[in-house]
Length: 425
Ligand code: AMP
Ligand code: GLY
Image (cartoon, rainbow, N blue to C red; front, side):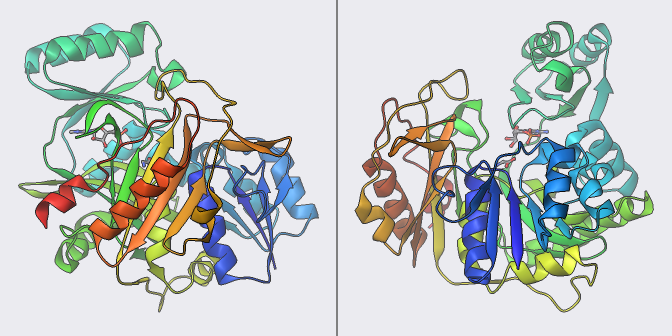
């Protein structure tokens, strides 16, 4: 069996790690693998966004499965092209991926399907958008409608802040094309929860729920990032809550997408806020989350490959369930100084051997590369150090210790991943 992983971040390293456990005899390939993936998969030197080249490569090398990690190739239609070429693929079509690639599309779909989410309006004209927030006056969230690598949402305390964000996106083009259309949302309050569900176009099979830490600073302060750490399980995510998420959110959205002629096959990520009125959607993503995958997959009991193949070959998820192993997982992201703003790459990394041998620590590389026998940083988020434990406190301690022991110039990480859950216990 031959499996190609598209993408080379921490999420893809975790996918590769899990799929290799599920199919030790398979041949693995990855696009431009980072330094951690390089020893586990053969390198394919094609950019994930080069849809044509990847499709012909996968076809001519007779891949049995292509797993698409990031949203951009999905939004560009890589899954459609592979499917048309007869290559089994895990990841939604371009049309279904609009659930992430167009926030305006996602909001309209949710509103039509009666899925609980923040009230919203869509604008392309700055003056109209400003008039709208000035009229409302209170807190709101200004979002670029298109893909913005997790940095497209500005949470505003008042209309002055919102007007600044509107001008930056619609007038100054701070988010490029992604911000030519903005969604202005009611600001919700509550704790956030990431629910990943495997989906075959009709059925959703949720994996263990996790919590991301999107802000750069400890105590959840400062600007949003792609995610600075995550943990699972989350005690707020009771069986009842997850059943409610299935009934009120996942099932209606899958149904609405199928009705719209674009059934969702792949991983549907519901980013939720647990408000006083119940779970409400903050956003949908059309792929696994990063860094949540680095805690969700280590806790998954049983195969990931089986349901992925069942989705890819059309046999579907009937009879599949995703069990959770006991214990807890915490991941701490090591970032380069300056991230999520501009940052430097090319710093030499020291990763102690003892960490690689520790069964309770998993190192998932993100922005790293090999150069002349050394491992160098090559991105804003550099590596995710996952700690496993019987309790969350134990897992958090192992994750933090691993983060501390990995060294590179300008290394930054949050020491408080899991703090909300630890405060509850
Ligand atoms: P998004 O890019 O839509 O995932 O938003 C990024 C982050 O901004 C979320 O994880 C939330 O912390 C925050 N956020 C987004 N939308 C809202 C909202 N309507 N109310 C409150 N916070 C929000
Ligand atoms: N961790 C947030 C995301 O993957 O979008």
